[in-house]
Image (cartoon, rainbow, N blue to C red; front, top):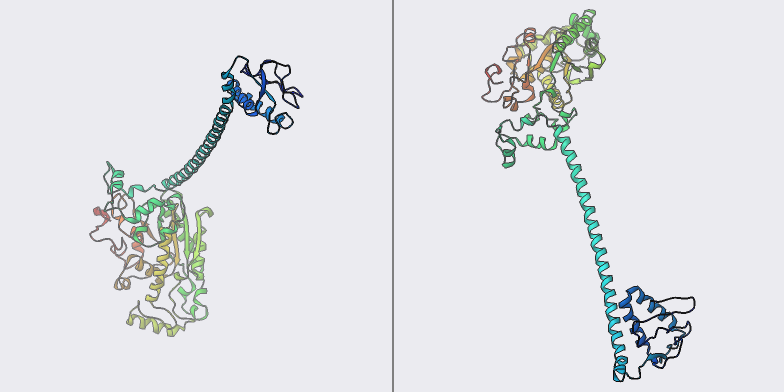
Length: 487
C-alpha cells in the first residue's frame, strides 16, 4: 500500500526482486533509502509497468494513486530528461533470467497500459450508453403519461355525451332487442337515419337542459324524440274586446296599433288568464309560460291581464312579434269607404282581396309562415323545455291564418272558418307519448307541427273548423288516425 506523508511518497511492491521492503521515494528525487548490492538503476518505463502491475493486484484506486504520485514527482526527480538513474534490481546469480526480465518489462507495461486505456474507454462508452438508454426510457414514459392524459380527457367527454343520450332507444328501436349493439357495430342498418347517428355521436345538449342550435331547423330529422323538450301546449288568444270592436269610427281618428281595450275587454283578458291557468294546473305538474304578443296596444294589454294570473317564477318571458299583428286595412280608415271595400272583398274573395294601402289574407299568410318557421326552429332547439307552454296574443284573422298554416288548410277550408270570440283561448295540445310517440311509432316520420291538435273544447269555439281540419296535419303516406293504432 501507499503512504503519503507531507513530503515523501513511500510505496511497496509485490515484486521483491525489484524493490526491497526498505525502498522509499524522496520528494525531490527517487532513490533507495539504504544501499543494497542487488539493486541497479531502472528505467522510467520499468517503474511505470511495475506500478501498473501492482495496481492490478491491489485495486484500481491504488494503481491510480501510485501513477499520480509518480507523475507528480517526475518534474524534479532524477528521471526528468532522457536518461534515468532509478536503480533496478539485479541479482548476482540471476544470469540471463534477470536480463530477460529487464528486457520484457517495457513491453509488458505498454501492453498493460493499452489494456487499461481500452477498459477506461469501454467503461466510458458503457456509461454513455446507459445514460442514453435512461433518457430514452424517460422520454417514452413522458409520452405515455401524455397519451394517458389525453385518453382520460376523451373519456370524460364521452361520459358527458353519454349523459345526454337519454333517448338512445330511439336509434335502436328497429334493431333486435337481443343484440342491438352488435348490429350497429356490424354494419349500417337501413332504418337508422344518418342524422340520428350523428346526433348520438356528438351528443344532444337539449337533453341536458341546454339550447342546441344544431337542431334549429324545421327538418323532420330535427324533431326531438323526447317530447319533454317540446311545449306541452300552444295557446292562441285573440285580444280582448277593443274600442274598435264596438265602434268602427274609432279607426278614423285613432291609428289601428293604438286602439285600446274597453273596460269589458280588460275583464275578458283576466278571465282568459284564469282559463289558461285552469288548463295548465290540470296536469298537476310544475310548468312555465312563454308569451308571444302582437305589438298592437290591445294585444299588449291582453298580455298584461293574462300574465297577472300567474306567479312571477312561472313566467319564462315575453317576445313581441310584428308578424302577429292584425291585417293591415289601410292607414286612417274612412268609415264609409271601408264598408264599400269590405263588401267588394266578399265578391272578390276574402283571402286574396288586398285593401288599398293595406294587406290581403295571402299577405298575412306569407308573414305568418315566416313566424311559424322561426318558432318551430326554437321549439326543436329546446328553447321551450322544462314543461313550458306557449301563449300567443294576436288578432282574429291572424289567428285563423296561423291555424291555416299550421294544419295546412286549403284556401276553401279557410274561407269557411270565422274569427273566434275575443279573449277565448284556443289550445293546441301535444299528442300523448303513450299513443303516437311509442317506439317505432309514426312520430319518427313526421314534422313537429303534426304532434299538436286542437282540443275538443277549442273546436267548439272556432266556427267552421272540422275534426279533420284541427287534428294532425301532413301525416306520412299510409298513416292512420291515432285511435286506429297510427297517428
